[in-house]
Amino acid sequence: MENNFDVIIIGGSYAGLSAGMSLGRSLRKVLVIDSGKPCNMQTPHSHNFLTHDGKAPKEISSLAKEQVLQYKTVGFQEGFVTEIVKQSENFEVQTESGELFNAKKLILASGVKDMMPDIPGFAECWGISVI
Image (cartoon, rainbow, N blue to C red):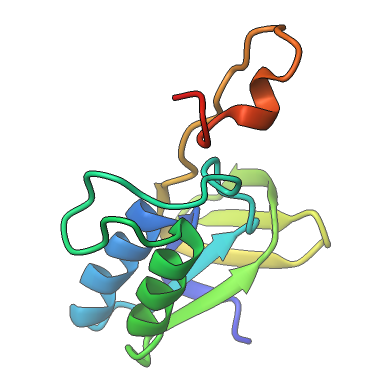
């Protein structure tokens, strides 16, 4: 995989893939880097999400990724970004495996991290029976 891009998107869930699709349609050379650990990973199915109500979040994001990767200028890299360094004309992005990528622009779409209270059993029920 070439290492120079117009845009690197850090986070490959709904927001990151949506940005990737828009940029891909605009013929920008894009790399989406995703750790594969979305905050909704234990949620069995979505609610109040038009056209996707009741589907598993993994099913929704897999379909989105498949659609985005149909754009030839968009690539996908599994990994966790550990460092970003601003160079004179671009950003250097490093993953935990040591791979380096460069881009003129960055989009941070890494989502949120749910902060769980220290209540026994709470985290195991989050997104299932505790909302």
